[in-house]
Image (cartoon, rainbow over all chains, first blue to last red; front, side, top):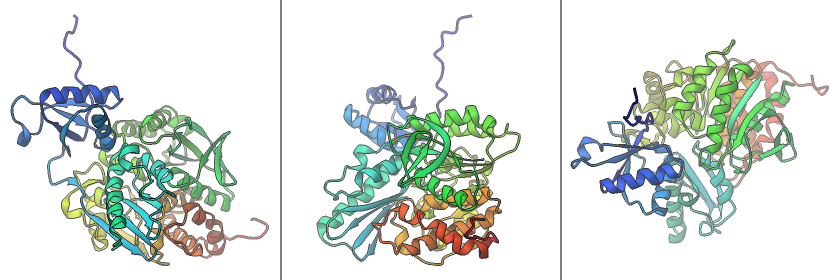
Length: 179
Length: 297
């Protein structure tokens, strides 16, 4: 017997993207798949449900890459969040350490260090995804102003956290107040 | 043999399997050259320093270029799934890669078919995948840093960037409780080596040892100083040390090598790796009973 039902996606992600409307969710699904990401259209969590709306299930570690492709392809969205119930949410604490001639800024599991006098990025550390050693190679040796943005070169959540650390480093450096 | 698995930040590097060697400032597997900077390269170069010291067979590596898009990571998982039984390594260390839980699950299923189960070590993306896929207990050693142990302690988290609010602060005095929670949640390997200002070695929820000397705060900003600990502990267990002793000596070696270069936040990790033979020569006789002679015996 011919099976006319579409095969259900076996993909199971750990995050969900809340978009503005059903059309946006469907476009997001199309755009993300075309870029090679595994995603699935799902119902939003009950507390965010408005009616017969749709959300996109994703792998959270790919957040930065998906955010970038949404920006490039004009797919506006409200938020990324973990599927798991409980109090998990993105780490928002930034710590700054003064090493005399250098400053280290840490956001979540990511750290960026720069020289106070020149603003040159001297090291990037932390994280465990493949874009972090790449960002290290691309950013180190350049000034904070010249260095590529982690959000533009990175693909993963580690890069998202590094972007937060980078933004804080820029803010501290431009303010001239290293601590 | 020891097999070291991970991505290299070079989009032109194809998947490579082979025995590793160092020539000048680079690592080679076959004719393929790759850097020994932060990440998998630093981990491999640390393990290679240990096998060289103990006059053991050099590590085999399974590496592929990946700058974050995941293509290289997927090739690596696929190769390992298809070949791990035939390769049957004694030690398998999994490092930088996209944390793809479904593929890691298949790796673990295949590992269970090996005639002799390898000693399994994970750090970085592979550790995130192992925890997220609830496969942590399949591993013998995890080497998290202080923010990653908070991630292991959070039963809901699938990535260190999303952890419960009460774990955000990453206070050093909370690490023992986080270690205990990680074991309670079955999110820890048999042995945890937590890298930080103070290093912790723990098993079954109990802290077995702490290492905090020499204290070198300047090591924290240097990218790759955690990766080298993973490589050191891999080399030391491959040399036959018990995981607990290997973990303790790995932490001491990293700290002492760091002290030797009088580091600043601008120091490169390869400068520290280059000190490992000297630290081994000066200390492993006393620590592990493996002594160095000029004849190289």
